[in-house]
Amino acid sequence: MRLPLLVLLCSGLALTLAQHNPHWWGNRNTIVHLFEWKWTDIADECERFLGPRGYAGVQVSPANENIISEGRPWWERYQPISYKLVTRSGNELEFASMVKRCNDVGVRIYVDVLLNHMSADFDGLATGTGGSVAEPAKKSFPSVPYTAEDFHETCEITDWNDRFQVQQCELVGLKDLNQNRDWVRTKLIEFLDHLIELGVAGFRVDAAKHMAAEDLLFIYSSVRDLNINHGFPNNARPFIYQEVIDHGHETVTREEYNELGAVTEFRFSEEIGKAFRGNNALKWLQSWGTDWGFLSSGQALTFVDNHDNQRDSGDVLNYKSPKQYKMATAFHLAYPYGISRVMSSFGFDDRDQAPPQDAQEQLISPEFDADGGCSNGWICEHRWRQIYNMVGFKNAVRDTELTNWWDNGDNQIAFCRGSKGFIAINNNLYNLSETLQTCLPAGEYCDVISGSLVDGVCTGKSVSVDGNGYGYIHIGTEDFDGVLAIHTDAKL
Ligand code: ARE
Ligand code: CA
Image 1 (cartoon, rainbow, N blue to C red):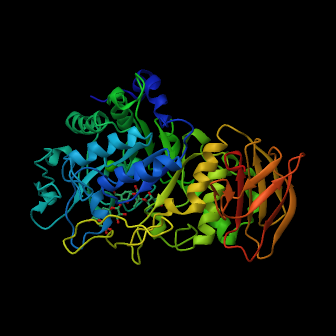
Image 2: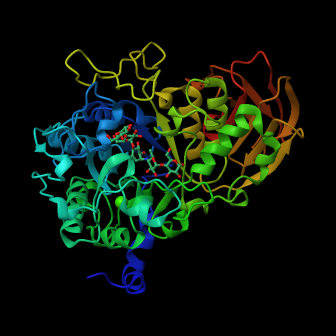
Image 3: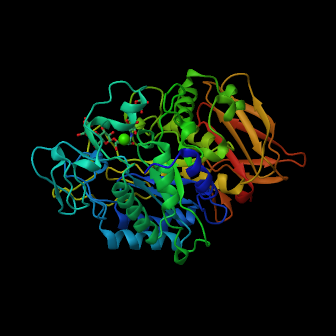
């Protein structure tokens, strides 16, 4: 029986509105997507790097069993065949231990969950990463179990502006679950509850646009509260952020979902890429945010690139354009807008390429060089000083307003965050050399882009701020990076 949307809205509203809270610990603010990492490596990373550097949480790759595809493309993980927690990232024990170890150092775990579909057609019997077998062509997934009647009729999405097709046909051939059926709802809720029991703080909901908002409302409202044994308060609801790709002219809109939880703001990614690639002057970023038609700040999950669009051509930036990428990321983390997610990639030359793996097709662990960067196929943008120091900047300036915007009428910009932080960016092909209002108390500050504050000294540039808050700011064409950032936690 389908309840009218209004009834569901009224009964679910109180609960679901709270599903915008990411449950960050302390003053932390930034989520990192450790794409395709193993659970044991993530647990280590929480303890040795993410906790100490002030990251708030990790988005992990799908945790439930998937089909094994020839050559092991990363996207096989988006083709589930059961809800057993066994993937190339690890098994349930390893998952549980990761969640606990990360929570223990104040880093939350958000799981990428696939509620829309199961795997696509496969010749004959398919085997999963947990040993389950399925016959996707017959929509038979005995390990759940699901049978053909749990799915929508097979059809193809040919018109992305046809609601029926988008929500009830098969996204790239993936068998489309019917979330209006009690059995399907029950299985999905059990799966989410299981993850919550293990201590996760929330979910990235894959392909949310391909499911009716009212079905998602029912599911989200039905899952249990977060596990108090992992440090969450009583009655805390899981944080939900939904992947809805809406460029602004879709039939199924992001507004159908943003009351249920946060929504990925793809236009943020596209516009920030465009600006820092030099296709839109940075001075226009003064009005960045809702004036650009973006969702309200608390509803927008923001990112420079994600694991899909970093593989597409176009304006979106990725690690392959490091100077522009670091500038865009610095702006992302300095400007008070959105729920920020940083991408951490593995290197790729073609779209389907597998993540770093050994001859037995086991995922390999990242290795680190003397600077702490990753060296064996993992890119680890989150370990780039210019990025993790901006995560620290964002923590330091939390809850302050943007003031004192300055620009040169072109591609040089600067602004303050209260009296806690100041950033300048130069994307012109000539020097930025100005005495600017930094809004900071008088003193000597370390630029956290060209270096850090280490044992009482700046390893990079420093800026002296006078009694009126002014400082001489220089970002030259000879500089390695086009950003300078100072804040009160990096004061000599
Ligand atoms: C793979 C093969 C396909 C094959 C299929 C089935 O590539 O050729 O048909 O398997 O055998 C990922 C990969 C896919 C992969 C899939 C399953 O990206 O290549 O297919 O896993 O293994 C739309 C959706 C959006 C979706 C994007 C990719 O709306 O939800 O397409 N994004 C999520 C994930 C992906 C994942 C899936 C969904 C599936 O982030 O990583 O796919 O779980 C316009 C529209 C958008 C549309 C976009 C497509 O912008 O507005 O709605 O996004 O175009 O570019
Ligand atoms: Ca669907």
